[in-house]
Length: 229
Image (cartoon, rainbow, N blue to C red):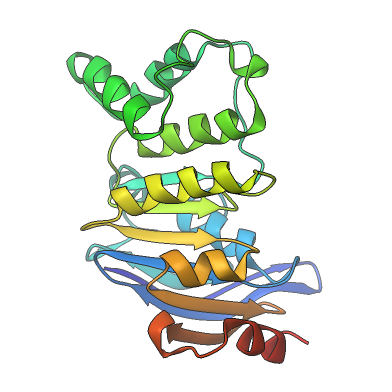
């Protein structure tokens, strides 16, 4: 269980997120929606441990995230919005590098092989990352987030800029991984969120406006635009 309580973060006079609270249960994919600048990426950076909040608390699997950051971060996989990759590295080389932060040396090879299969990278492993299509670079970013089989997966716009086939393949990989895990998925696609997410979380101007079960939402478009105008 991930429990976020009253997280706030300001940049000077601007409040990026203000008293944000929500939880994510086991096996849930939570769709994180909001306009640009609503506070999604700031919230996700805080949960990934790359940005400190001004106030609030986060419990991850019963541990205080800010008191036990290393222990908690070992259970997190994070794909940032800009998907930073080392372009001059080969796909396999990069995934081995990423795995080494989490796994014993003897487990790295099998983890890389399994993750490449999960993310559809079997034909790309020998290529340099800088030569890959945007879709395959997204697959590599997802693979590094999954390489250590994290319990909490944070995905910031993983399908942005991809064609419909690539979007579907990435979503299928995420869904196949979700059993027994907690996933926070930021997306601008309302239909994508409705399709794969068990709950919908809407943020606007740094505040949570709604947190509903997907099955209870008659029109995700009406709800979203009604809350973010």
